[in-house]
Image 1 (cartoon, one colour):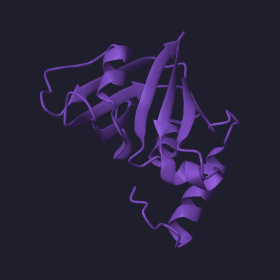
Image 2 (cartoon, one colour):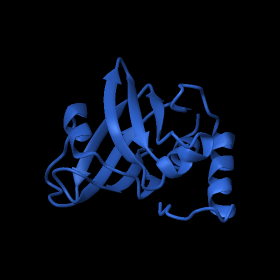
Image 3 (cartoon, rainbow, N blue to C red):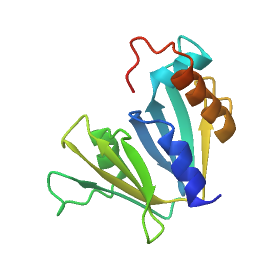
Image 4 (spheres, helix red, strand yellow):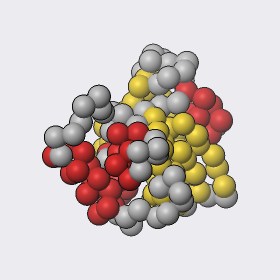
Length: 149
């Protein structure tokens, strides 16, 4: 899978918060709270789950002090970053800009991975195309009262 696809999938979750992050072999599993999209699937849903496959490297640099580099998944999970924007760096890293709920005001999460898989709260795989349809339904339905992504 191309880095552009991984970037595009993660960008769908604008202002979604990484509630959980864990490592399993070379994969990173995550839970992302993005209720404004999850509610479209089921009004009781607020999260998505995902896996970054074959992660070669991951680290977080806080905006508050760029001399600090968090490399432990436990440390990165603790700051609970969200997604403000996603881009691809020249060196091939995917860079997520985000605010943090704990410890820092925000920062940038960098990683390299081969693939991404996204699941609903019922752990059903959801394709990139289906995610795009959810965003279209959210943005173009006119039914966004109370939802501010």
